[in-house]
Length: 176
Image: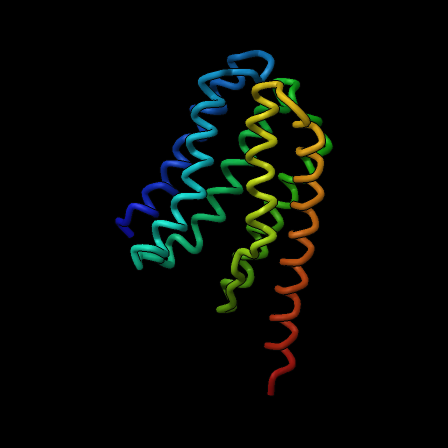
């Protein structure tokens, strides 16, 4: 477990309380310190997988906790930004609900010995979400458009993961 990639994943999770506190203390969600911490932690998501693959240190811990860290990281940050009045509650509720559903579904499949891998499309929408969050924290550019694209993409990839999970369950239940 003690690999650089896994350490970066853990750092992303450990950054969450600081980001949430700073966003909530800002009053309006526009904390420079929270934005810097969020952006740096988001960059670790790009780095951890590359480092693990390039050094041959891909672990089961990383396969499980990297996507979980992303869900925690994004969900907690957007929840804080909603409380601060920066993001619309409907979009955040949809994403947090989807993330809870996905975590429970992953746990359910895992209890039956099945695994789903993160899709490339899922990685793209995670990156769009992270960009939208940084832009929202800064109040720059088309962050609202990016936010809603990320919400739609999150729901779409959630549907795709659900269909893959159901297909795996169906194959197991119909196998002789």
